[in-house]
Length: 168
Image (tube, rainbow, N blue to C red; front, side):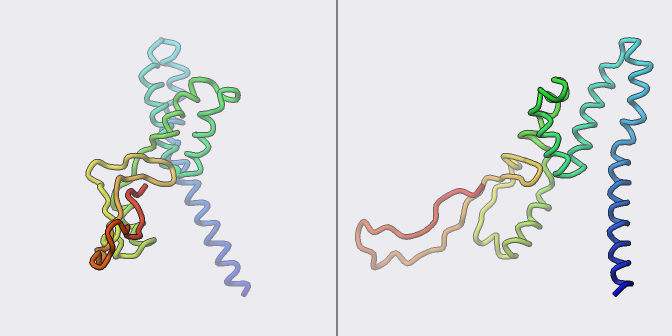
């Protein structure tokens, strides 16, 4: 029991260390470039391009860091009373337009959650890409496929029971 407990603790510690290493790796280019910007380029009046790159890099790194970081940045983007206006404007993009993931990830999630037969029940239009993309999910245009029902024998004006239209 003690060995199993120790191995579980060790596994958690290694995963936490790997996650910390990943986050450090994401921040390293910005950490290297920012002193050059602050000490050399900004005083010379040539820091605009690097500053724009830095903001793009920051939002991209936040998106790659996962949903918790995106949610925190979304919250920060709404708090002009706590953060500089420039930061809130840059993070406002994360409110309704995060970088979408590949269709293969969505397809795997649908297979996992609805089973491999989901295609017979749901028609998804992925040709135009997602109509919305957030930190937790993406939204595609689609519709439920209705089963063919026997309509013979119904009286005139009798409606068939069923569910309606779209899928979000």
